Length: 408
Image (tube, rainbow, N blue to C red; front, side):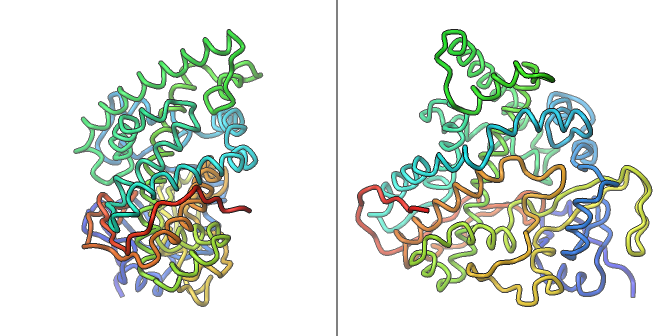
């Protein structure tokens, strides 16, 4: 039997399709246009923690024919692309702003925001979910985290959306929009840093991410002003774009299982577990990249130093060898999904994403109990980073209500 080959750069190729599952039944990996792809859970989870591999995203611009310019230069400096001591130092300095306790304290604010947005469309019985909920919700949460005025969310969202195209398989053709967004976000972040530094000098420090990171500049191995700007631009993009996309994919999944949607409304404490299950079967990050730093032999596959491997998140998450019943069920506890990566490059902002979605999804289920898609919507390619561009939903109108909080 000839080995299969996946063209991951083809926008028409769906990394969640039956052809991928068939290949997984045949072997644990396939060759692709971006190196090899791991299809099974055990091999994927092990590879992400294997110290013979490093984060593979540093090569992404070059893999797409982008070798110089503002975007290429910035990409080399973001946390995703750094390794070794530089990566450990930056991660250690950024970590305090993303602790579970810090993010958990924001739950009431997230609930208040979700209810405010739902109240605006619930009486109509219809919503364009991306523009009316997923985007303002993720963008305004980002503004709260960064200590930026929430009124600025549409502009921040626009820049973050365009910069988020850096993760897409059309990155080269989107380069002018990506670099314009990069320039805009840099200017905005620099102004926020200046304003916050003035507050610090006047002892008016705010307990937000920018304030925390500015104080990190005083620590040993401090964060330079340039590194802070690079990090905040990256966080603005990653924090908005991936969360917006994942919330849209969450609705796509849950509305496909009306019994699970009803269960979430009845048992809102399942919100956290619903997030894990959604990211197992329908992740926005459809693959996680690693690069071999030495020659590696894995179960019959030789990967030379510099070889790139993609762990396909959906394929691994639905692998029947690791999950005998991989069907969607928010009550089930599963092996940890790979949607946030693993090992040294495990997603720094995972507590934020987990918390804001766990808050929003039960509230949406309660306010739109009979929700169904109102047409097919418009979706990004199911490869690279995916999600909804437009997702109309209809439901029986529900009245505005007092702010409801889900206690944990």
